[in-house]
Amino acid sequence: MALSKKPVTGMKDILPEEMKIRNYVQNVIKETYKAFGFTQIETPCVEHISNLTNKQGGENEKLIFKILKRGEKLNLETAQTEVDVVDNGLRYDLTVPLVRYYSKNANELPNPFKALQMGNVWRADRPQRGRYRQFMQCDIDILGDTGNLAEIELILATTTTLGKLGFKNFQIRINDRRILKAMAAYSGFPEEAFDTVFIILDKMDKIGAEGVREELLASGFAAESVEKYMQLFADLENQKAPIAYLAETLGGFMEDDVRQWLDEIIDSVRATKSSDFEIVFDPTLVRGMSYYTGTIFEIAIPEFGGSCGGGGRYDRMVGKFTGHDVPACGFSIGFERIVLLLLEQGFQVPEEYEKVAYLIEKGVKGQALCDVIAQAQQERQTGTQVLVTRMNKNKKFQKEQLALQGYENFREFYKNPLKQG
Image 1 (cartoon, rainbow, N blue to C red):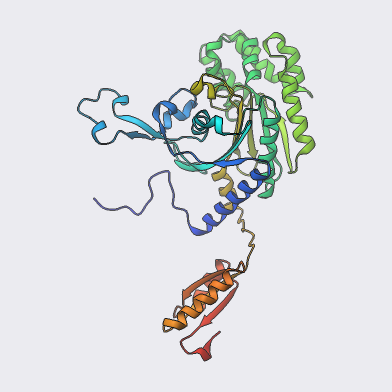
Image 2: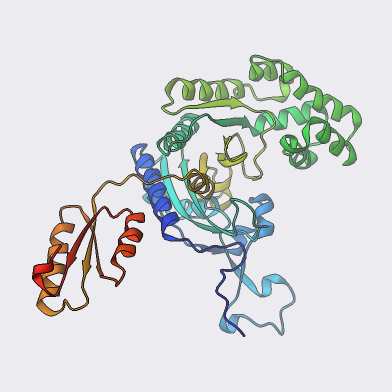
């Protein structure tokens, strides 16, 4: 079988220029989140298959890269179901591993626990612009905080990071699963059909209100319920205070504290934000994960034309592991899409140190070579980045290539000391 130079479909090799930007973005993320009191953790990329398929991950559970049992445990002759041959899988997000991690280590962790996690995840998805089968996720989560301070801190930390990376005029769209459920119940949809209704509603930005109406009717829902539901969205477009309007209209269908909860988050973020963005209530925002129980939010960057991250509150997920619910809320920043936008904008990483290239003629060896390397070592200790390399025959072209990598100064070392440059 011939060897292939191409990476596996949906995955990519990362060249030095992109790697430089990725490292820079990761450092900005780490430093900013650290300033907000988040602590970095790490979890394995492989998870128990039972954890990954517990009906919490929505559509992502259909995209798991599953791992066969190994050695004597794998018996293909007697296997009858998938459970007989699969025991693990590659994680499709960082939330499931975090919840398992917290459930196991909660006694050793502070309360509330503010976690930062960065790592690759895998989904057997259809590759497209800004979407790969292996990609980096950067999550911050707060576990153990019962109030909406968690949402405020998560939104401020994430938007501060985006501001530091140069993004402006973006939106944080916010909603609450409790509002989604109240609107569906008020319209007369049966509770067991809510997820189906929300999946269709989630297409609003692609197919419009008329498309949503037609799809709901085509799914067999009562025309009266569909019209009542769609009228709610139409009425909201003209409301200056849409959350207050919903609280009044939905009456007993919506929990009393939802209005104050969301208003407080929006008002606090607007009053204390340090980046150029708008936070807007969006009653059509759904977020695909079925584990969300309350507030949900999403980043919309105009240049990308889609979501560049999101998250929400998932208060019942820890309880699946421990039997005791723990309030939890998280925000995942769209790392790959942000890097893509920076690359397309020709972003240059700001240099914090001088870059010097030592070009050494081929005949320089022994003690003379050691002296050059010792000089480089001494210069590196002052914070300078020093590249030590052999001199090419075409020195002019070599310098041009190094200049493209940011090397501003060159020092030349020859076997004849009189020629030193």
